[in-house]
Amino acid sequence: MIRLLIADDHPIVRSGLRRIAEEDRGIAVSAEAGSAEEALSALRQVAVDVVLLDVTMPGGSFTDTLRRLREEHPSVRVLVLSVHPEDQWAVRALRAGASGYLTKDHSPEQLLDAVRRVYRGGRYVSPTLAEKLAAHLGQDFAGAPHELLSDREFEVLRGLGTGRTVKEVAAKLGLSPKTVSTYRTRLMEKMRFDTTADLVRYAAQHGLIQ
Image (cartoon, rainbow, N blue to C red; front, side, top):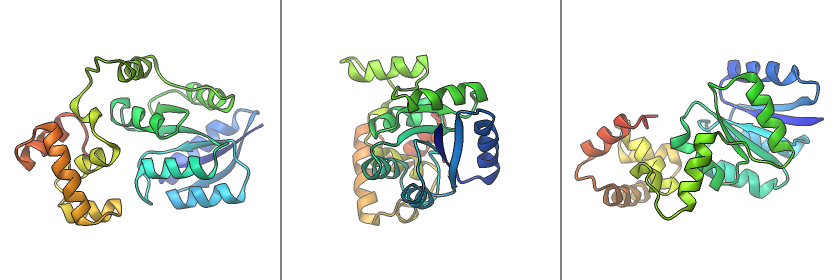
């Protein structure tokens, strides 16, 4: 029996995922969580084999949550389930310790297959993502410029891309405004932006708006 934790901040989504999971006799939902802290707390209280983890949840940075989860519960497998396209978060999620990445436009059958695969110790990635991972490992990476940013730089890019101020982004990420300003400077240099307007325009064009 695969013991599943569903971590998503939308109750309706959690309910739908629970129904899908419970249609499979080999899967049992051990707990649900609506925030990063709730997920980590649940893992300390109930036995879990696989976590279905949403990218956008309250409680801090997604990659920080994922790394913390893997550090505290190394035997638990993590399948990231997200509305965000693969080119935004998939490679970062796998680097941080996820066993798979699935977008929410996949079928229930694909979701259950992914859960079973990561439970058995495998990885679940789409053919497109597999090609992207191979490119990252190679020498001639030709992805979008934002894919070369660090996780923090990418989060700051997405935050500032919505028009938020440095102070607002700092509050959302749990960082100091000075630290966010440092990340902003770094990503502006890497992306060769001259103005904040360039940053906002790029974020909108590449679908990075939060």
